Image (cartoon, rainbow over all chains, first blue to last red; front, side, top):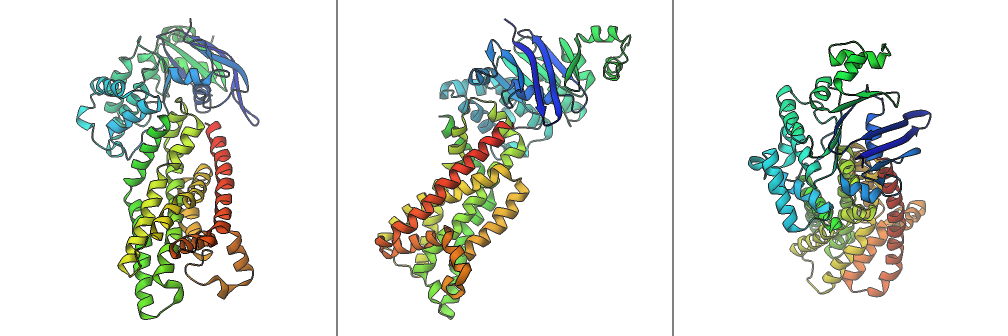
Length: 242
Length: 243
């Protein structure tokens, strides 16, 4: 079974077609990046797949569950790290992690077990009792990602997780994200070409709500006769493909 | 379980904001002190402590609206709600998760107003218990109003609408600061069509042990609470669906 099977997914906002008959399949454990300029429809796609907004047409199945008819089952499968840092600023790091377990209905024992696991994986021990709002941008993003993974999601949506971070913080977060490869199905949206190229199994390029290309970074470069991935992306978006 | 987890988090977020403690507890207390000092120099029947302390509870509840609206608007702007909307929490988990923590805060606020009142000669009697417990149903209207504003306004707008406008409206139309009969006319009619003065009358009557006077006022305030809650829930659901 595919982790994600998107069929003709469409979303309109008044006269604007944000996502236009998008069809796409993503395998279990695959790391898929969704690229596009601003307004290409990446975030709307993620929002529909996360059951945050309803599609106008089409459907998507996450591990066989429809986002239209079974949103509760879909929500139980996924984790999301939204574009902005999504943390409770007046709560400590530990309390933020506990919050995620609580809203998923985890027992106390399971919560303690998951916190231990996340603290190790994300090296949060030294900041566990610090208020989340007092952390640096890099640590807040790290916490935000840890919160998305607290509930052991089968599918993870990362919406521009490194946006606005400095080079070092971004590199550190990449290491964390890279470690997820193969363990969980990931859809990443990003503006950083090198991020997509370094992390992804496959990359999709969206323009005006449509998926105009998909494949490995090498395939996308070969199809545009370019050697740098950024050049390949520009060629696809500008329509300079041969 | 999900609802209680979210309610616990909301309570912590509110209580860890020092402004909450000042405006929620301190400010109504400061006003009781200030007006009692004025009363001791220039006696004004309206500011007699057995009228003032119960009335100030209602004014204090307008800050509960501010807390309620602020936390929701802040959550909406911070993307935390986006994350939580994608969790298995139901709309009711959210609505009650925002409402429940404000009930004990309102209750503590009521206790504090009576405690400060006692420092200025308010007689400690059993009716204080009734008036304090009545804060719970009365606070539902103010909490619902916060839910409503928090669902449609930004954090900055909430500051203006709830922090400045509502607290002033609650003060003017509650009859705490001046006798509504002195103004009379349309102003008095508007005041009695709104729930604030009725809340004040309920608290004052309960403290005075005049229980027969409570029912009519209570019905109106609860009516406002039900309608406001229904409207607030619809607006919250609407913004939730927008993702």
